[in-house]
Image 1 (cartoon, rainbow, N blue to C red):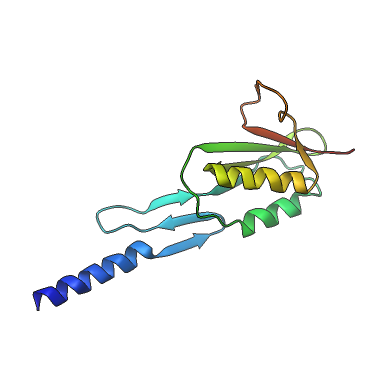
Image 2: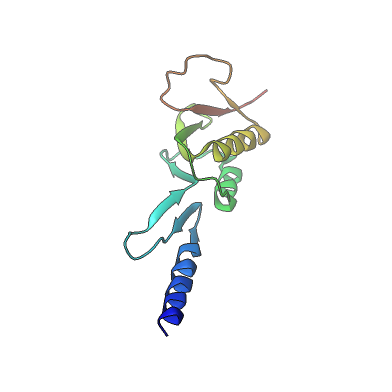
Length: 134
């Protein structure tokens, strides 16, 4: 009887450890009753300006559909400027793969990184994108 109870407890704990709930681009894993939820983020975003450019719909769709299993690594922050050259949105990625995936996507939709070919970036962001009008 004791072995059956232990197996049952182990199975419940394993199921609880494997349970993943998604909300937008944030993933939360519940470890066990000794810990609060450990939040593992791959990507978060914030709009910081009222002047949202026309291309933001593509970016919002990307963020909404974003899915990655790589949550390890440093936080990297990308800024995106609107047509008035003011930063309107910031996106934080956690881990190298989400960062690189975001960079490639922003380039695909016609944005360019202002500091791509610059050795020293004094902006405070890991990348700053603008709409490439050319």
